[in-house]
Image (cartoon, rainbow, N blue to C red; front, side, top):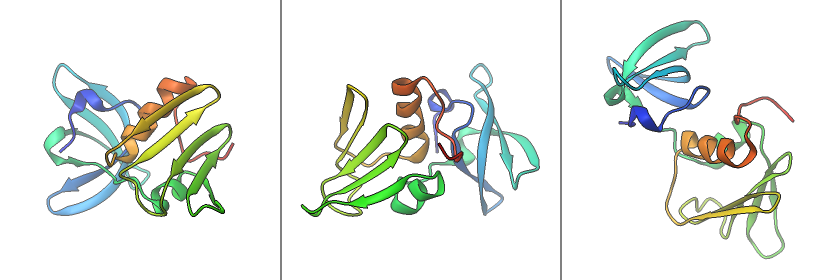
Length: 135
């Protein structure tokens, strides 16, 4: 379940439609009715309540899907890059302790977050929404 108020246009989420999980992109958010319009399969738009929306866990695969490049560091840590935005993990595949920065703005999160939450941090820091488009 995702709180509708946590979503922004462009966020990537999973939709649990009658037991079938589909990845989708949030097109619009209606906080008053607590619904999000989500595009699934590149063609189906529908309004969903938060109880059928599931977060996509932040992972190596999720970051690569939105065109982050991975760079393994000599000290065993991992850095993901997209433009001037960086995501740093102290240990490979340990997304429970994440640092990210954009220019002089640095953040640290010591819990696992979902892809849509990273997208919202990115938007807050860069003023541009994080999509799969290459930079």
